[in-house]
Length: 156
Image (cartoon, rainbow, N blue to C red):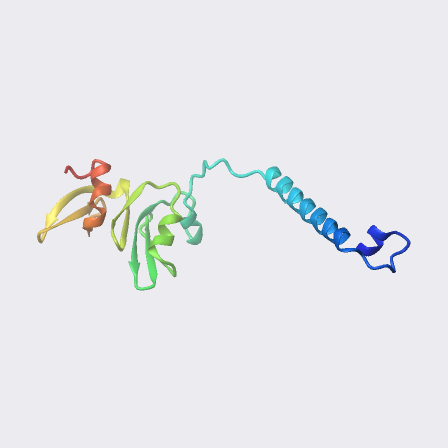
């Protein structure tokens, strides 16, 4: 077909190298222009989402918020504001990247906690721990202590 478009009625003739290269270049340029036009015409959400992407993976109501996330072998446990706990097959790091709305911190290599659930920081058995508003405690890893200092939760 390409030979007929370039060669006209003499489509039985073999297309030259330069003609073939010009056709490939034209097709590539057209494809690039088309993809850019489609990309530019797409409407992306304004980023004003009121729900974390991670919550979209869970069977919870719209008004439920994240409380904390912790790792459990190759899974994560997600605790929500309605008191339920859900288990997902994913890494903690990947789960944290899906938290878009709820402010919070990784306080340990295996724990993320919502800012609104942090009641304070105390010492327990010689280690600093985050006290949760729901009554639990989470150890603070030395690597993550700076995050809590920057947020004003711990004084240096």
